[in-house]
Amino acid sequence: MSSQIRRLSTVDANFAEQFRALLAYEEQRDPHVEGAVADIIHAVRQRGDEALLEFTEKFDRVKASCAAELEIGQDELKHAFDTLDPAQREALKVAAQRVRAFHEHQIAESWEFTEADGTRLGQRVTSLDRAGLYVPGGKAAYPSSVLMNAVPAKVAGVKEVIMVVPTPSGVRNQMVLAAAHLAGVDRVFTIGGAQAVAALAYGTQTVPRVDKIVGPGNAYVAEAKRRVFGAVGIDMIAGPSEILVICDGSTNADWIAMDLFSQAEHDEMAQSILVSPSKEFLDNVQASIKRLMDTMPRATVIATSLKNRGALIQVRDMEEACELSNQIAPEHLELSVQDPDAWVGKLRHAGAIFMGPYTSESLGDYCAGPNHVLPTAGTARFSSPLGVYDFQKRSSIIFASREGASTLGEVAAELAYGEGLPAHARSAEYRVGPKFRKAD
Ligand SMILES: NC(=O)c1ccc[n+]([C@@H]2O[C@H](COP(=O)([O-])OP(=O)(O)OC[C@H]3O[C@@H](n4cnc5c(N)ncnc54)[C@H](O)[C@@H]3O)[C@@H](O)[C@H]2O)c1
Ligand SMILES: N[C@H](CO)Cc1c[nH]c[nH+]1
Ligand SMILES: [Zn+2]
Image (cartoon, rainbow, N blue to C red; front, side, top):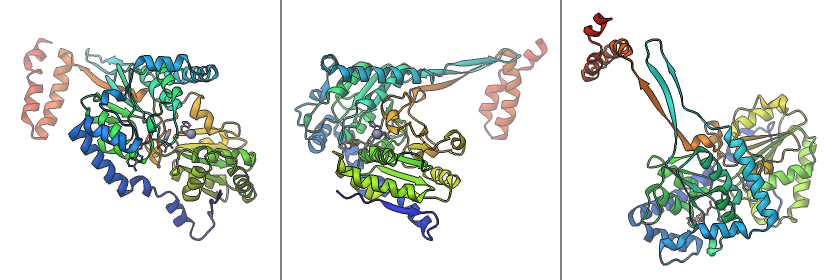
């Protein structure tokens, strides 16, 4: 199997151009993907279940006579959990408990304060009524993504949690179903891709419309979420996985090669990049990649990902490594250096930062506690990990006392007349009144 991966150096004359090409996410905004997704969404919106059944047969090779057949009942979820291999069940329980404990720190509470005249201002936090969780399932099964999606939704107190997951050729992954039971998911549908996102966004005769769709997926899923945003909330664009490793050259080269493989094995579109000031270390990692590639069951996916989107980049120093990282804004950033605390302050954009040589990114994928649904494709510049806050929303609370209405009313009226909006002004003025001022 090929172990090709591009080598770049920031001292090369054409580095800026090569770096731009490396970060061009053309495939994710591929016009073919955009066109296909637009057609799928339109069809599901127009024809509901009928289109959903057609696409599920076409893309996942699952033939069902009605959409209700695509729902997995609570009994089947429980059975999957009860009969799961005990070691796997225990691992799921440990992961769920750690993810829950971490996310409980994120719960936002309502707050309020009172001004001197008795006016009260505040923010009321409420949870979503119904959330849609996308759990990917095309090229791999993701029980861990069930937990990462569902646990924060439950911690936030979402009333109804609807999960979708594709089951290629009708194969239902036992661990995925068991994780759904463990996390308390309310309903599960075996649908995926853009058709599942459209069904959740607009509702069909069988799939209920949700208020927000969260969760990761491939380029079709990411594009579909982007398109339905507005009709429904979305968390972020969490597309094909990415890892950026910054290494000072002191970590075992095999460890770093395997860290790069770990994200490359998700998808041919995944991106793995290593940045180091040490040429010798980059050479060693390249040799490890070559030696280890053929030991990997998913070598074909890894090799394609590394060849098309991977890179080993030599930088002048650690300062420059941090600058490049900020430009990349990676989903996962491994700071594999002896003193990560000395550098972390310089890193402004990353979905998650893994500190020091012992913290493999894969710990975060499964059980460290923080969420593994993270912004990709440079969107960590403005997006955050999936969290309880994605399932909560805020309403402002304003209570004007009689005196407060008088004081604020005068200010509001002045501004409203200035804007040429007299109804606003008079609505405020009605409540000011000289009567009130005289009385006081
Ligand atoms: N960013 C994150 O937080 C995160 C977390 C976990 C996984 N991931 C990523 O999620 C992705 C999972 O991808 P996957 O493919 O395994 O599962 P997926 O569920 O995202 O996609 C499978 C679906 O894609 C659709 N599809 C595939 N080919 C299509 C085509 N030609 N036309 C129309 N639709 C098509 C099908 O409907 C299929 O059901 C990977 O890229 C992985 O890296 C990201
Ligand atoms: N690395 C993925 C997020 O990009 C999450 C995951 C799940 N299972 C393994 N990995
Ligand atoms: Zn992963």
